Length: 383
Image (tube, rainbow, N blue to C red):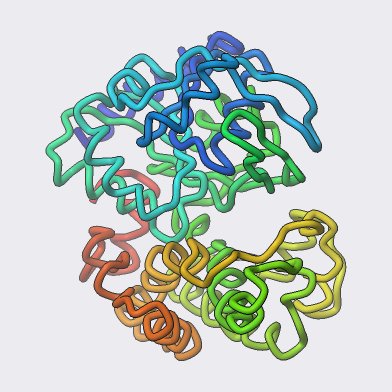
C-alpha cells in the first residue's frame, strides 16, 4: 500500500483516533530511563497505557505496583494497565505506539512489529535520531508488511528523565517544544491532533528530513563523551556531564560538528536551527556561543556523565546519527571532516566499526535518489 487512495484511508483512521480523546490506547516500547517516565506520565494523565520491554523481568516491579511512581517536575502515580514482553500483546489494538528505545533497536523492532501493525496506527520514534522514520519504513517494506501505519519522528526526546528503580522515574524537565513529523509529512496535522491530547509540547516539523537533521544529540553526545574520556574513566562519570564536561575548546569541536550537520541539511533543501538556537528554543537558554548556552541550561543540572565511554552516547549516537549524516553528505558531495573524525575516534576507542553497523543511504532506502525524489518520498509517501 502506497498510493494516495491508501493514505486517504489512513487519514480517516486518524480522525477516528482523534475523536477518542482520553480513551485512546497508548503503548510505550521500552522501560528504561525515558520509557518508564513516559508510561507513568501517560497513566498519570488518565490514558490507558501498555508498557513493553524486551527483558520481561524488568517489568516485574511495574506489574507489582501496577504502575510507575513519578518524582521531579511531575509528582504522582501513573497506572499501567499492561506490562508485557510480548510484541503482539503490546501492539495489537494500540492507537499510538511510542518507541522509547535506543535507535539501534528501531530496525529489529520494525521487523518484529511488522506482522501486527494496522493501517493508521501511529508509531512515534522518540527520537528518530538521523533517518529513523526512513529506516523503519524501509524495514517494513523489506518485511513485506501488508498494512500502512504512520511512522512519526520526534526531533528529540520530550523529557530529561532518569529511572530511579524499575517502578520509579524522575522527570527533570519536559521540553518546551519538540517538533515531530509524519511520513508522509502532509499527515502531520492529523498526527498532532492525536499526540497533542497528551503532549501539547509536540509541534509540527516540516518533514522527517528536518527532524532527522535537527538531531542535536548527534552534536552534543559523541564528541562530549569522547573528549572527556579521561575524566569519565578516572571518575566513573562522577561529574556533571553537560555543565562541567563542556569547555570552550570542547565547544569549538561541537560547533564544527553542528556546522557540518547544517551543511548536509542545506544540501537536502532543509532549514534547521543551530544547536545554540535549539538550546534557547527548548530550554530558554541564553548564550553568545555554544559553550555559554550549554552552561546556561538549567535543565542539565544534576545530569551526571556516563560511567564509561562504551555508552549509548557513543554506541548509539555514532552509528545512528553521525554515520548517516556522513553517508548522506557523501552522496550529496558535502564534506563532513569533523563528523568523520569523531566516527573514526569512536571506532578506535571502542574497537568497533561503526560505519559497518550504522545507518547509511542504503539502509535508509534512499541510495541514488535525487533530492527531488527524496522530498517526494517524505512529503507524499510515494517513492
